[in-house]
Each structure stands twice: as structure tokens, then as C-alpha cells.
Length: 399
Image (tube, rainbow, N blue to C red; front, side, top):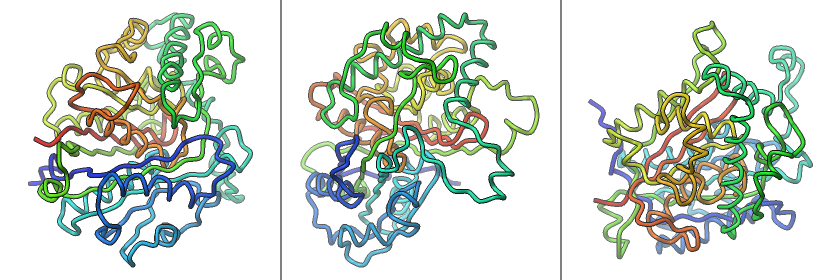
């Protein structure tokens, strides 16, 4: 019977470019920036990498539809390279491919890279694809803020929460991310905001204001992985291991009938249950030290705290206002600024989240370093509340 990949994969090197409006850089520049940091961190020769996975979502705006550019940009030694895409979980999908390959013994050392170059498109949000007549007719247009605004309305209605209370909790989510992002030299947004500035910002899609929405960015992030027995020969000290990686995709339930109340993400709950089981976690509230979750909108982070079973049903907004997920709280969330402030170049986001957990576990996060974290979790939500993919990864130190 399958027993998962817990403690079968080690991360020996990670890198992350500066995120932001990188008008000065092409996709290959961002990829090289992240790769050089990871390669130096791993202290291996590039020729030791035996396979690579390349995550990029908007191929029209970036590097094309194939995996070939990654091999070319990095002058990889004629190894297999696979291009992957899974909505906003694309970076995590690249890491999953590399992790599964080394866990299975298909290769000893593998690379996972994610990149997106979105600011050049001129869009303030995600760029629109040219879908063609059939898809435009088949799928009515929508906006991500509009879709996630409905998540907020449904959550407030389900739990009988006054909208003003919910908006204060959402504002606290954004306030926290700006506080954290201000300490991160690689973050896109490094400016602190007051609660008043957030609450008084122009409305985008009620109840989401401007500062409840993450922007898009340019950036790249990557990881080099191997098996723990090999890592022990390469690393002088402790190293990070993967405890679990789980994905769950919508199957049509949310749109097929009225059993879904619109106030949660079914996929996150399914993936979380499997991830905790694979990692041997029985009480995530007590065992997990920090989280990086998919805060595309402030309401998303709030709802996810319950979907990840870190807050009780209907209580996430109170936990947020009480500071549970602040930098000095019992379970810091988005300690690097999150999607909201670090940025959201889609193909890189999952690996960027992993990068922060990796630094925190190894005690290398500088001014934002937490005290002795032991387990970190990342979460991506690709798509919209009623049609999405949830990806959850849990990391710890070698045992």
C-alpha cells in the first residue's frame, strides 16, 4: 500500500529572485537569478542535476509552450525537462514533479523552477487570454475579485457575522501582510499601511477594497531536491525534508448542485486531511509553526484558516483580530508578506512560499526570523471558489 513521501525527499538548495515590477529583466534573467542562488545554496555542480520541472502558467506572456527554454536559459546538461501548469498551484506542481522523481528513485537530484513575467502585459490584475469564440461562449467572463467577493458574502451569511466585523478582520489580514512585507528585501510591496488606510480604500468588489486584493508581479523561484541519504553527504548541518504534498481538484460538486454553501473551499479541506495524515500530524493547531497560504484576497486567507482546520468554524475572523496569525502570534501566517506583498507571479508563487518556510526552518530569514519553527505549511488555491485546485505541502527538518 502506498505510504506517501514523508521524509523521502530533502531540499538542499533554494533560490528566489526579487519580485516586483521587473521592467529591467526578461524571464530568463529572473530564472537565472533564482537558479544561481539555489545552486550556490546546494553547493553542487550543475551537472549533478538529472531532471528538471518548469512551472509557468501564462505561456503566451512568458517563455512559450514548451520546457525547452529552461534547458536553454540554464544550459542544463541535456537532461529531461518537463513543463507543468496547474493554475495558481503551478509552482507547487513543479516541486511535486521533482520530489516524486527523487522519492521514486528515478533520479538522484532534481530541479523545480517556477517563473512568471506579468507586468509587461500592462494589466493591473491577471491578463485575459484570447480564448476564441467557443470558450468565450462556453464560459461567461468573470473577474477574480468578483468571484472571491461572493466567498466573503457567503461566509458572513453562513456564520451570521456582521459585514463591518468581517471587513475589520479582512483589513487586519492585509495590515499584517504589509507589516511583514516591509521587512522583506525581496518583496514587491515593502510599505506598511494603517488599518484606516485599508478600510477607507476604494471598493473593488464589495466587500473587497483595493488593499484586500493582491497584485501581480514578475519573479522566479526554485528548489533543488534529493533523497535524505544523499543530502547527508552534501549538507554540513540540518536540512529541510518534505513531510507531505497533497493536491485536490474540484470535481463539479460546487457547481453541480446546492450541497456547497459557497462559504469554504472543498478542495482545501480534502487536501488538508490527506496532508496531515501523510505527515503524521494529529493536531495541526498545535504542531504547525507557520503557514504560507494563498492570500489572493484577504477574504481567501480568512476562510482558508478554517478550511485548513487551524481555526474553528466561524471563528477565523476572531482569531485574526486576536493576532493569532500575526508575526508575534501563536501561528504566524505570511511572515514574508504573502501574495499580498511579496507578490504573485503565478508560476513562481508555490515555490516562493516554500522558499520562506525553508529559510525559517533553517534559521536564515533575517529580520523576520521566527523563534525555532519546527513545521511549516504552504497552501495554493488555483482558480475560483467554485472551481479550483488546492495544493498543500508540509516541511520540517531531517530527523
